[in-house]
Image (tube, rainbow, N blue to C red; front, side, top):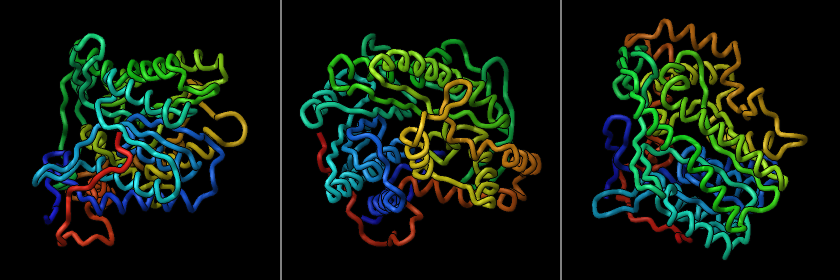
Length: 396
């Protein structure tokens, strides 16, 4: 079939297998062009099929030579419906890992469930024995609590008052004002339940109880802080409250793991084009301005560059892992340089529909959005007949 992008708001409902495979290979090529990392040997990535989770798995396997287990919730192709981008990404990763002689296994299902945790533990015990790094990179709008059955749904809202700021329709280029009503107490509670640290804690507790977490193991979850421009809807909103819970969980996990030489961190990463960030009002316009400034300064990074730097310089570099006063790893340090933020703020004040393509990198933002789904990728013939039915090797 001929596969073309079909969008609904900030979601692309189709994905291109060859384009996704090309994007995965580009990340692999970047990592293999860099010095090898003396890091983990057996790695579990929870949320492994896109974005920072996928990049973490690639760096683990092709940068450190580690065996990996990836847990993710993606769908195979069915009839005229393509598979999800994460499915195609994972198929390409598994194929490349096998060709490189790395052990790798995929578990597809609800990472929040007891069933998938048990299945993952059984696989680790049988195939790897123990793991020494757990990456937690789950981004989901919904969670069913495994113990109570309660269904939680997250929202992207401010706290305490109505919020208004500029935003952009990245398909049309129209800059407008987004106004968001504040979250209720129950919406806040549910967002924390979905995006906070409880499930991360459950994963580590169960891995420890099962004896498959190695002595001295490290675990890392991902977060974002961002600039003042986005604080009301992000860091000081419902998502920020969930991230605060995630950071509190890291402190508890670190205290427990430290008794056996282990570590737990939250890594604060750079703002990048992801399905999740595309859904947050204000953020796409901010990222478009940020990209323009960082590309002009020659310090722009994507997911793979960020994750290589995290592993090579922070987690497994020489000396102790560098953290800020709150104990957070900051690989958003280039984004948050005062001179970068000052230039972004200057552009922000001037941005309108008429000048958005001049004052921001909206073209680059849109291209990266479609590349998440395998489109707008160099070297791919999008007019060719393409088989959407792609199998994942080592799918358990």
